[in-house]
Image (cartoon, rainbow, N blue to C red; front, side, top):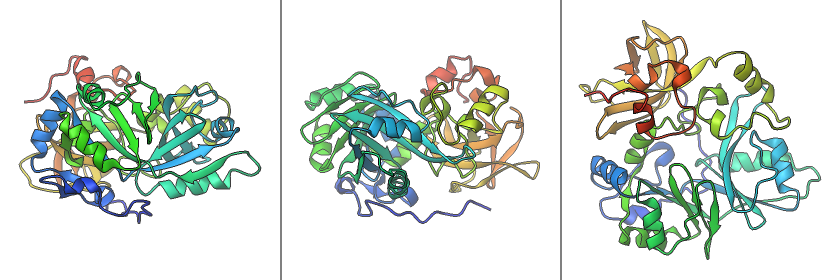
Length: 369
């Protein structure tokens, strides 16, 4: 059985303007309104790894939080230390259930008196509703923002942004533009604007390669960076994925779900961990998110994102029980699978933050042939 497909309340249900670019083929599911690829997804991966790929994330949803109490208020509600959050600084945060399960994951950017929260498509209204319910008499204002997101990934991301006459802040920082802002992250450069069409054309003219969700997913899988609701489920706790390092401050004050996070961190290891599965490429099969991972006929996890990588072949992210050993034969849905060698090493040696695949290989693990 796969997880039930959620009915998404999309803030941006219309097709992206970037689907008008040459060769664009629309995606499906959570990415149905953006391009799956632009004609050659494997070439898009190679070009993004060597240069700069332009990823359409205009279906992500942005909430603007303003008011004098915004940082103190958000600090009490989320897993991240955001009070203080200096102007022009960016991070990420979670809203957890009382039992520590992840309910919301979002980027956080403080700029010129407003905090911008950006989250996955279909999650914006639910996040806004939760925040509205927690306002009480706090001096904060919440609105859905008209800003839409584009991203540059790859080693030439900052060069392309600079060539397009955009500000290029340091990593972890943001800078305002005439109509929105630019944010620098580990993965590249995110650009927020209410009118993404002209900006996308400008970036392409500066050398960015239009890069669909297929290529973006394939590259992201090897960095172990999850997407909310795709690579996570209703039982996910931050300790199971890279969000513990990126979106949780372990020494801040009390927030909902903190007890679970602290207990698992201090007294034991999480029940599951996010890994990469190398899949049997001899079968032509579309592996859906939520498909079970089996070992000896017993369910030991769930599949998240699956894609064809231009070097490593078919790969997938999966949440599996910690008891799954490095040589355990697995079935991901009906497909034979094995843990990626980087996930078969001693667990304490695995980087906890989202890093590129090269960092895992520096641990002495070579890419499979």
